[in-house]
Length: 94
Image (cartoon, rainbow, N blue to C red):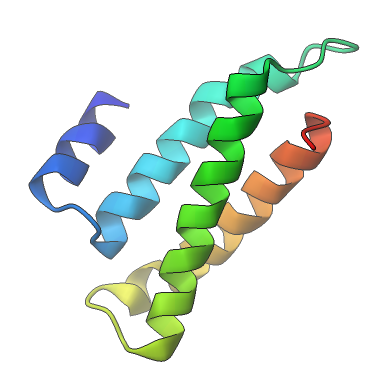
């Protein structure tokens, strides 16, 4: 997480920085979602939803106008958006 945050501080709103930060956030909360019959705390759901929104926003921006590094990260973003959506669903986030 620290490396992703550092990259984001050096190059905010770039394709790689947004991807690595979002991926780190997902990995950080996944263990909390694995506990059977334990609903995730509200902050976890909020973080997941905000992260998904940021990822989808970057994907929409890239559709409208090509972004540097997008070609390298497009498949990663699609997978990450799916994983975030799955985590939100699995966590029972509303």
